[in-house]
Amino acid sequence: MPTHIDDPEFAALRHASAKLGRDPLRTQAAGGNTSLKRDGVLWVKASGTWLAEAEERDIFVAVSLPPLITAIHANDERAAKATDFVVTDANPQGLRPSVETSVHAVLPQDVVLHIHCVETVARVARSDAREQIAARLDGLDGIVWAYVPYVKPGLPLAREIHAVSKPGTNVVLLGNHGLIVAADTVADAVALIGRVSAALAAPARPAPEADIAGLEALAEGSPYRLPTDPVAHGTATDPARLFIAARGTLYPDHVVFLGSGTAVLAEGETPASVAERAALPPMLLAVPGKGVLIHRDVLRGGDALARALADVTGRIDADAPLRFLTVDEEQELVTWDAEIYRRSLAAAAKG
Image (cartoon, rainbow, N blue to C red):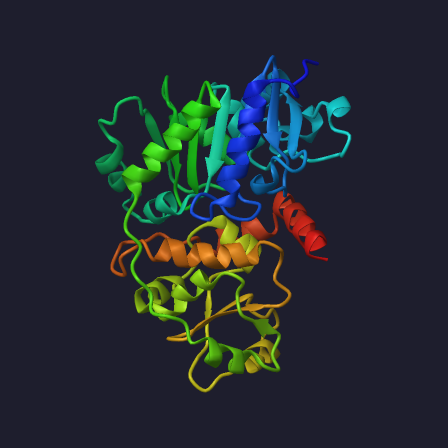
């Protein structure tokens, strides 16, 4: 198998991946995935790893591309995990390919970057997402875009992308999910992210300051704590954001790391009483006008997703037509083997 260590494009991929992973407006925690195709091999981010660590550790897995593509087109369910196509000799750590490996495989370009940038998510969470995108991307030179309404990530998504993509498609917007760009070089793919994100961007609505002292008093004696990123408080201090967050879940990683929706502390309740009466205590608890609290048992990455919620809802008007994940879609995610595996890695990393 050809070496990749000395490939300048692979070095560029690692650098770009780390930069994307460190920017909370581009992707969060273990979310997002990137890849490079070389001589019949797909080097793709390993499941549960963090893009932010791409230059610090080996987070890429080598997958044999031709048999994987054959399996995808033959509706062979082995393509869902893609573990049967891993180049074992190049995987000494026993890493598992990203849940989106099949998505990277069906796009023909050498470089594929998939992120959960907040500018995109704020648009694709709308029920009029296609119209929102068309108004901002149509006519932009060098951008050929496709839109896929929400479908379970992984193999089902790969099949939908293949079905709707036309020759030259290099931008794919995913309903209630995120953004994919594809190009022949890492630099071109990164430039596409910048152009698309800028075109879809909306200013973040200001949020009042959090009541830190009040939150600390509420959290005392409970299994809750303050979030590590103070931006997360905007979900509860801005009434418009809270109105949106309280209505349901907008994208998959929220379910994976924080559970279904956002719990709101009712008048007369305390975080301790909420935790005591709930069979499954909410991981994210919004205290109206004060800020948010996070359960101490939250998975590694939960704090990043708490901030993401504030970032996304802060870019959506309170009266915008929104499409929330259904109960069945949420259940499909939490019972999915791929996400159970990802959560187990996050739990082990926290421990």
